[in-house]
Amino acid sequence: MGVDEQTVDQAAKAAPAPEEATTTTAAEPASATRYPIAPGYRVNVRTGPGTSYRIVRTLPLGSRVPIYCQKPGERVTGPYGTSNLWCNIANGQFISDTYVLTGSDGYIAPRCD
View 1 (cartoon, rainbow, N blue to C red):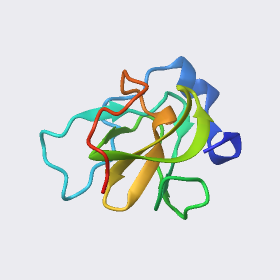
View 2 (view 1 turned 90 degrees about the vertical axis):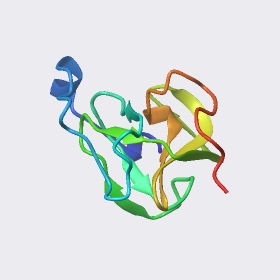
View 3 (view 1 turned 135 degrees about the horizontal axis):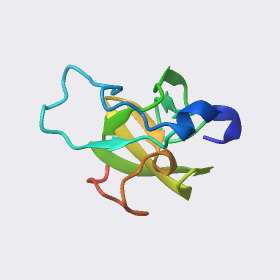
View 4 (view 1 turned 60 degrees about the vertical axis):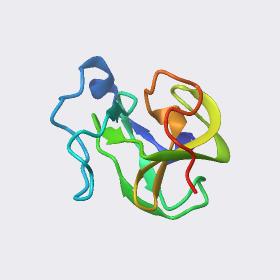
């Protein structure tokens, strides 16, 4: 997800994102760890691990997401570096790890099948 894939809201970067601005799915367990999306970014969610995959939705500012599994894919640059690692946040929905604050440059969840 390159620069053309994201939008930055300068006002949102200056103010912390509200905790209640989250994205959930019906199948998500209540105890799932949720990771914050980089402040000021609306991130495109895709059907696979790359920018050539179809966009299924866009996460709003201040989103926090679960990560069920991760897999390698297209190498992209985001606010947290450059990586080919993609996070599965729901059934058939992926975002680049470079937009998620996980505290790690590597895998923090099992590899996707």
